[in-house]
Length: 258
Ligand SMILES: C[S@@+](CC[C@H](N)C(=O)[O-])C[C@H]1O[C@@H](n2cnc3c(N)ncnc32)[C@H](O)[C@@H]1O
Image 1 (cartoon, rainbow, N blue to C red):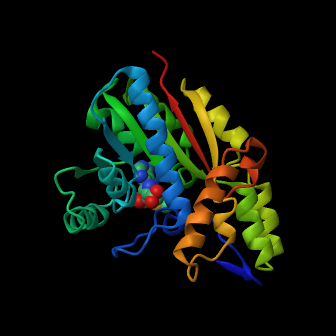
Image 2: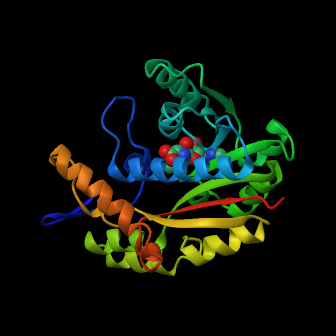
């Protein structure tokens, strides 16, 4: 985190987006809005597809279950796929601590295992948040997501972006690293993500920015009314397509064509 006077600029990390850790600390505004966006999109998708029950969500790279707990609170069952047995053990503890052990489970594996774990064309909803940017070959993971989804099934991607990561380093005074980040073609921006997602045969239905405002504001000492105002502002700004590339992260929701 980089402090510049009153302004705080953070690069989106699991902590800033998912970051409840093992405690019951309040969710960040970025996380709250991301979950709200996903739930709103899923609710619309359920209506469009005539489903009466919330679908099970596969959370690929779901770590210790920050998203899983939030979705369980909204009535979803979630299966977290995580490469690390330690993360799965922490997931189990967190699910029990929050009272959602009946809605949350975990399975060891990674993106390459998706089809083997669940079967081709078998999963209604896959979330993959803050994972693609860590992979050597995100196209392979996106193909696995596309192959595992049912026709008409939905996906949710949240991906950290290049511009904001560069600014974080620049504001910290590390200008050489900032330039390296900027020139790093493996970093994501909305256009690169769009090409990869459509290249995997998936259809993008909604694009929103995450954290344009809230990542620049220190939430620690804000009154609840200010947190609520920040949430409203974050939600409103997140709808503006011209700001997406400048956001710390981007959220994409879409479907596998029928
Ligand atoms: C930054 S954390 C994000 C955790 C969670 N999705 C969230 O949004 O809070 C990245 C996660 O990706 C997982 N991961 C790394 N490589 C992976 C792979 N090849 N397949 C699936 N998950 C992977 C890590 O274990 C870690 O839990």
